[in-house]
Length: 581
Image 1 (cartoon, helix red, strand yellow):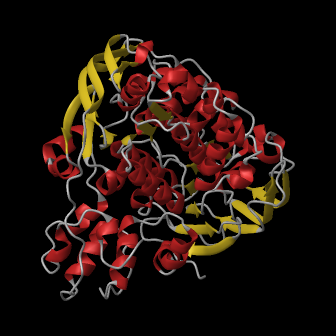
Image 2: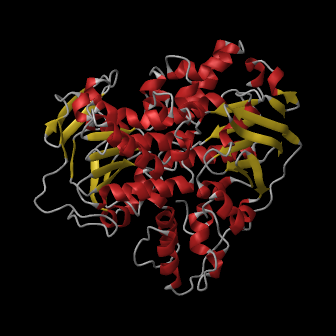
Image 3: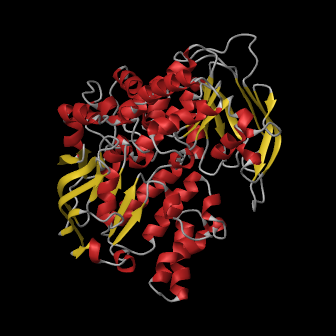
């Protein structure tokens, strides 16, 4: 492919050598029988923002670890080929030396936070470069202001929300002022305002043209305006595309779709509409582009789905009364009253630090409420031992590794069943079903911590589902998943809901909410700010302004379409004509 700069990015300067050069790189993990990724070659020049795409398990995060030498110096595995960072061979250069050139943000921010305060955390890296104290403090302040954490500089990282810790990890990387910034899913736990702040900061990083970014990201609706080049891997970890955003995301969208990777929502919608006879001349990347393209087309007769019927719900399965939780000097939840009825699919949304995770942890019995009551299936969660609680509610953590307790994937899924002393034959049958359902049958004997990020997420959901609880609570269920696996998981949750399971999810993905939730709970500053249908919540402009909610991409594209009123009321990809996306 012939490269040309994306309009939003700074073009590499002519004659400037590559900042990063990979040649035939392959990584084979311990216990693995083949390399993933395999035979990867590409270059990154100063001024570029390169998006690394690929299905779950293709080796994106593994490849990122080779860029700063953690693989093979700290993480066991065999690396072949060459990784050159600013001319230095990553395989032979000490990690401490490479850290001056490469700043890394891991998929799990907790893996890199080590100090007792937000300010100390950001100062730690520059201090190790032996910079003068005034420069260290200036860098730390600038980085924390960029991600909106300066006012919390004296807090412990432990009291930040998951999104807050992710912002902190990004601030640490920014403060290093390294020529190359490597970011692995940096916005996965961020609210829309946080995403905007982080991407604004990253634009500043590359604006002068002497620094570069390698980005692994699934939220392409936000990232597409930052990125100027895309390198796509297939399921075996081999490069199948390397070019500009237009050349890869527009021209090869159908191919990437078949690989199961994420695409912008507008692009997914356009692929379906093309199949239904809408002669879109160019695949759009944004809702605005999709809307403009549709307004330029004549009306098209289309067979549209029947209106969504309201699903029946039953009695209250969750009753929360007067729930108040404090953490340090901060009140995380304040006097929350809430009911969830059997058979509902409820999405909990709101800005970082609003109390979403704390609320669902209290509902699941993971966090004991200091004040107030939580009853599930009529039982006070504070009085149920874990073995009995798991029969009523299954919980999936925001970070999968926080719930792993055994040394193999099989034993992890079997753990709760064995604690209930079920017959081993029944345990094996249930575990095998979960392994097949989540594509983990070939990983049954693998240590959970050696799985890819997406595989860890699927395992964590499998451990929650295997017990057969009537209530399933998931904190960011699609975190770390490729599009195909995320679609499978959400379809599975829809099926479970149809069978009578009550589903509660925490998410920052507005399109996921529009696709699946029939009720939305909006949290803000520890209080319940709104409770209603997805349509009602996203239509409330004052609520969106107050809580930072983002309108789902399809709603932005279709609302008020003049030439295609048949699409104006559609909110879900699955309801578009043209078959499955």
